[in-house]
Length: 239
Image 1 (cartoon, rainbow, N blue to C red):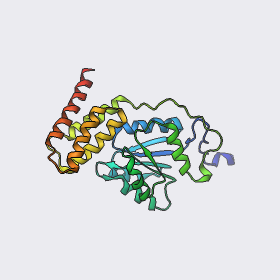
Image 2: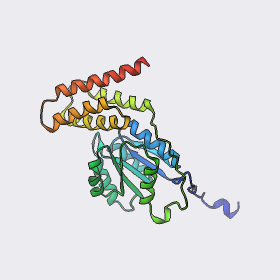
Image 3: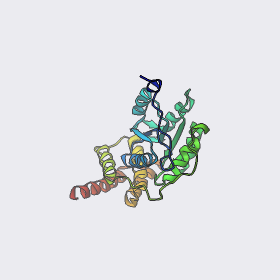
Image 4: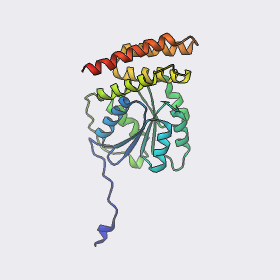
């Protein structure tokens, strides 16, 4: 065996079209549709991706391996992603890149206050914005040099992932949701609808959010939201 055989394999070097080659991204994201957008952007950039759909799953992932990049959604079913961002920002050694994401543009100050390196606003459609946010947060020695060639074709998540999110929300609506669950459904479906361009669903989710913020009864808003979800599920069955 030669000395070269004993050397560990060198990590792949970034290229002009795959600037994140050799990196791993952990997406802490409850929406399969939003996560599929992240998956497409990560793969086109050369990064591997893993997903955790809640805070508990994310902490379990992070106890086993250390990603290069964490992208954490703020609205998660078991708490705020800002809690996880704050914990990760205070860890030593710190993850190289820590980003927050949300469909609420007013959430960016919350992400910054928690200690994130940057913010990805939803819908997640821009590969250039995704790459720029990550590369700007990398330590100088790890930033890819030279010109990057970024395709300008839009990111189109799998429509089946959208239907999976709809089915998940419909299952949560069975029975009478607790107030905290109604809040979660309003933000989850509002963000999902904006990402998919579903204005009818977005309006229904906004009505539920308004009823909760104004402390009005939510039965009518929940019933309308359930009807909109059923229509989308019936459409999938017909297809």
